[in-house]
Length: 280
Image (cartoon, rainbow, N blue to C red; front, side, top):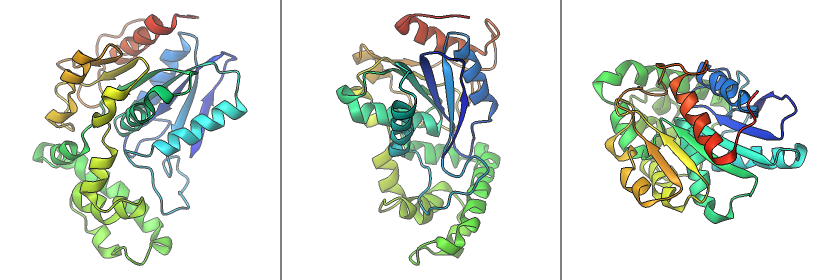
């Protein structure tokens, strides 16, 4: 993993994780980092394995449940940058699922320096998302994602285990086939279904023990109905769910406030209300 820092000597840090086939340089990552700078945070934008432009040398890949990779980043920050005493972890789409899964899995045991968690456009139920993104209206996006993922498989051809059918991988027509033949096998899962069930964050949302915001648009065509955890939020005093009518997938581009996108404003207000503020 490659890490992109923006440091201005603050004692607060936001750690940002991108979505599927994204990177630290995506506009939504840079924009959110800038929004946090305005309220007194340094930022660390994480390039997940193989997403910085440098090939991942292992068979193991980044995936929706790679919470151990977030833990590696946190351990590095705790050890090498101990001045950060207030940390927010935030993720978009796939990265958001990692953040929520990590936070829910740890529950009350989460490090006291991690003060809040944010998820934006999160596929918290991976099975329903695989169905949704396979619909005809998402055909272009589906093919683009699969093309990028297949290209990464080609680079790794020489190190793939013998039980992986290389030709089968390259002919995958949907996420079920790709995740079954590659993602699952590369990361220790039995099948695509096992991967999706094991790595979905929704089952652990009720275990979250720090202030957490999930922001998901109702018109997000990548997400299934199961990705809208209204009931869990209603029963919790610490997990908050916002579902505006519009925004698409990692969109929310309208109603700029204080030089921020709407989503950036909402997220930073949420953090300010719970941690206080150190505005520039």
